[in-house]
Image (cartoon, rainbow, N blue to C red):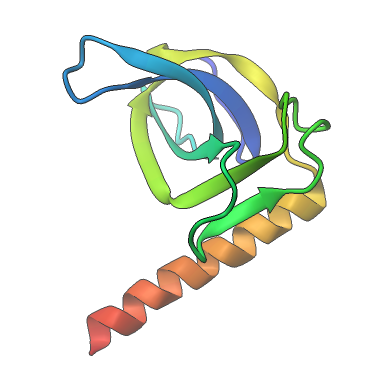
Amino acid sequence: MEQYAPGEILLLKFPFTDEEAGKRRPALLLIDVGDDDVVVARITTHATRTRFDVEIKKWQQAGLKAASFIRLHKLATLEKELIDRKLGKLTPDDWKAVQRKLKELWESIVIEDAK
């Protein structure tokens, strides 16, 4: 089974809740531990809406067709069989921006949990 690297952009089929249908869309690979599943964050062309969205500055270099945003608060664990193909990879600067925002996201959860 293929293994993917953090920061790669994948085209995959996001299932709908009825599990009968889905929509092909790009996603950012966050975790692949080598089993049948991966953890991804949604990518959208819709402008930033929350503080946990990250603009992809070098979207063309990442293999995307339009300016896009990563929604780090929209994570999914999906089966690798839903992956169609690899589109590209984030540049080091865009990946660092994602890492900073992920850290902020998890720190906000810990702070809220401690209250």
